Length: 118
Image (cartoon, rainbow, N blue to C red):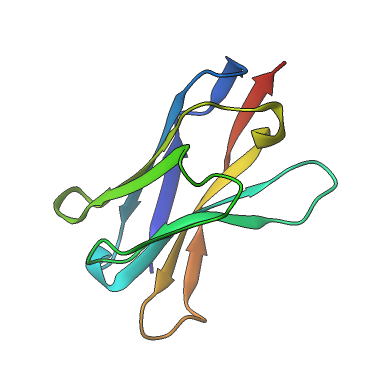
């Protein structure tokens, strides 16, 4: 069992930056692929970025070169640095922990809201 708690959302103007953090607890953090997803009003939840325990990353095309995902296994944390924010980045952002060997085992945080004003 893994608990994940997000923090760092808020309101920012177009072009601004935010840093989201996710604190995980309850299991061996290093065996989980950590990801950030987002869900905008009226849209499906989508993957923003993910990172394996060894640091391999994957990004949605819409955020490449603007967002950076990182993790600190010793601290059980994963961060998402978001730069050059656009109004279309407005969404609720969720942290996800997915077991590297059994992908059906996954845990979600409660979400943190990001609003980018134009």
